[in-house]
Image 1 (tube, protein in one colour):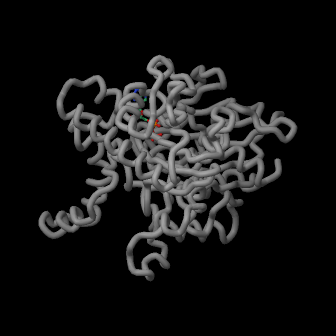
Image 2 (tube, helix red, strand yellow; image 1 turned 45 degrees about the vertical axis):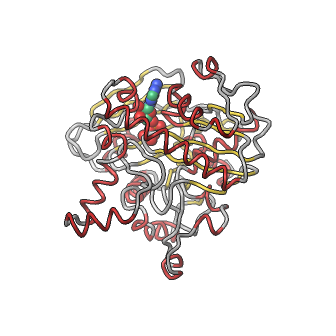
Length: 394
Ligand code: ADP
């Protein structure tokens, strides 16, 4: 029987999973099985999975309606027992959104560590409880299998102090009201593979992770120095449904003049804003790019404008710009968004090779460009599997 590491990324209504083989202490480059369960807590939860070749190997309705995370994991592991009978899961690695100030590295999930992670729930109430639910579910179903937590915040702990604090009175900073930053596993992956693709990898690099959730990070010598997300993952760029950076005075206005409470404001900022809120049409970039409605155009323009503004801000934090990397669903797949963002950033000496951009080459900058521009697909799952193998010395 071959050995493998299972990676888990548990969200509010979905669980993404991937199985990576380990052969003679070496982790495979690609997952042999990957997929997700969607619709947790709804009447029709579904498991979909593919094999290494990208062929569909499952599209199953879960046997119970409105399953919770425990039931969904129950189903996932029993499906694995049949479908992946050739694979022995020897460890499980989890994406954990928040490691606070405590965790700047992956950690084995056991004993008091789990209590410490529970303490961070108020810092990430929309994500952390689901990450923990996944950890507890696996613990009860596979008690002998070691688990490792990999944090979305960890990459950013190398930032200078001033990048990590708000201009609030000290007491708030000390109790943890700080800029943490997220998407760290994606940035870590890009930092790791960048030297294969650019001779400027050790220089001043800005990474734009553009998906439904979107953020940017600046790094120098492949260590984080600044990022656009802050205390929560709602800060920074305009996203699919999240508002991004907003004047805090707007929130006071909503409370005082519109009588909105915390729950209503949370829904507004996380679920009803961003591309969806501005366009009134969709959160999906493909739909907006295909639409000729002025509201759709305005949403796309705002998305690109905010990224271009932040490229300037990130370059300032890094002391200049040697390379710009696009990743995430939009960054990897939309030549049009890359074209617009780089055009707005031409003042930095960025020049695109249009054909390389259309064909999605890894290097898409023209030879005369002052900045190396690259498109590198991210792989957060592989990063989790790598940390799990390394920490447990498997
Ligand atoms: P998540 O943050 O949920 O992981 P993804 O990284 O999967 O998000 O990115 C999803 C986004 O990528 C969606 O807005 C989708 O429209 C966009 N996207 C995917 N393919 C393309 C494409 N070819 N052109 C433009 N946008 C795309």
